[in-house]
Amino acid sequence: MVDRVTHAHLPAASTAATPPTDSPDLAIGAFTAHGPWTVDPDTMPWRFPSVAGAGVDTLRAEAAVLARRLVTPQHIPSVGRVLTVGARLGSALLGWAVHERGTPRSRAGLSRRLRPAFERLGPTYIKLGQIISSGEGIFPEELVEEFHLLRDRVPPERFPTVRRTIEEDLGRPLGEVFLSFDRTPIASASIAQVHAATLRTGERVVVKVQRRTVASMVRLDIASMSWIAPLLVGRIPIAALTNPPALVELFAETIVEELDFRLEAQNMLDIAAVFAGTGQRSVVVPRPHPELVTRRVLVMEHLHGFAWGDAAGMRAAGIDTAAVLRSSLIAFLEGTLLYGVFHGDLHSGNLLVQADGTVALLDFGITGRLDERRRQAFLRLEMGATTNNLIAQVEALRDLGALPSDCDVEAVISDLGLDRPAVDPTTLTADEMMAELREVTKALLGYGARLPKELMLFVKDMLFLNGAMATMAPDVDILGEIVAIATYFTEQHGERIARDVGFDVMSAPIDLDGYRAALGFPDETDPITFRDLQERRELIRRRLQHRSESKGRRSLLRAVHRLIRPDRS
Image 1 (cartoon, rainbow, N blue to C red):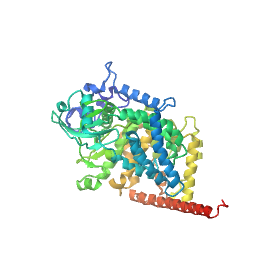
Image 2: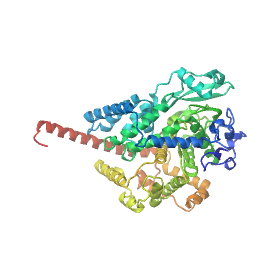
Image 3: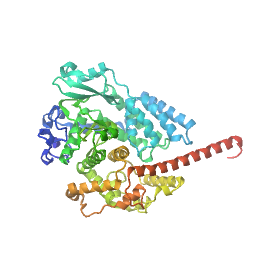
Image 4: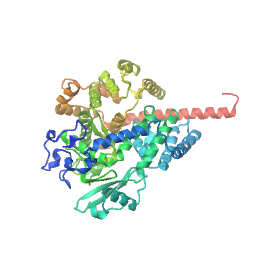
């Protein structure tokens, strides 16, 4: 069974819902109805790499130890690499300081200069940039938009190099394994590239191949980052709660684990088991090959479908895009709240929608994993949000590590003004909005707030699914969806939630007024759609932009005045 050597909360085969077909592996995983092979985890040799029988959990623990060691101050990095990185980033920061700092173009200018610097620094920094590019709502908008360009800027390795890696890891000539192998990759990313191929047994597959030098480069770069990051604190305008040292620590935890494809293949089995355990059949996971998985090579089932952003194509094919989005959100929440395992890198490149409306989830290199205490904290956080219970929410954030363990919960609520009536941001001036943000940020930093890895991954995924409403369900009533999802969890998992955290969802009312206030519609009674929300956000954005431009003009006038009358300040 899948949970024999993995996370303690993964569902066993006996607890899974009745599968839709007679395919035997559908009892233990949410896979396609008719796969190229049958998944039997106990017979997959790559899951037991040690002669002593230790499983992939041992590899995962070793990766975590390595990540911690790489970011410790005692670890001395390569002087040459530190100088190279320092020169690239320093040049970008110097150009920004001379030309854009203090102007309306400040953040856009810095983002524009950092992106090519990351690009020239190679795969590790490109990967970091790609993670930032999917952090809409966490990192500044200008940085996210600029770093989106890094997703398609990684040139593929030459085919002889790819062939050499495959043959070394599989221990056989390419022709003994594959009947055909497409030399041009389907995709080329910072860690690996993906090729389509056909096995000699006839199955069409996808082959993920790691770049040959990326593992050694990652180790050098993380050590260098950990030295350089503290020097950037207070000198670079990125989100205060994801300061450079914390970002490097989070990045090390994710990328070191990504370097072993056996862990990714196990992530596929684990998440497929979660979906099966909850009876979730609207999302499927590709099957990893029973034998052809190594540290640098991952052979898996080849899935097809509409690109996630092709809502028009889906609708033309008769697919209910709003239902697709709803089921994806439910599946994501079930995995996080009930089993503590979730895909940690949702973005449009990692999801396909198949012709029958099921979502194919791809690329499992980054996966969130929660121990029992943090899983229950996430559950209490969501239940507290549903009922607008401030104490429950702040206590949950404390238990997740976002606040110090000894913090005074009631003082946090008071200092942040969480217990005050919500204010419609469109009624504030730009200066008032900025003052509010500064006060909240100052108070959070004063309490030692931070953004732990799992919380950041969770928030990032939720923001992605929220943003997907713009194309998938722009006219759906947001509050109606909240009620529908809350009702689903009450009916399907109410007893489990009550047992886990003592929260009776059957009797706790949903606080729709709180949601309306949080969305900026405190006095509305009509349905609120994503189009309405976009219009409100655009109004706020224009107001802040106008403030920035006005401030920039005032700064420019003051500078000119100083040049004309240098005797006056």
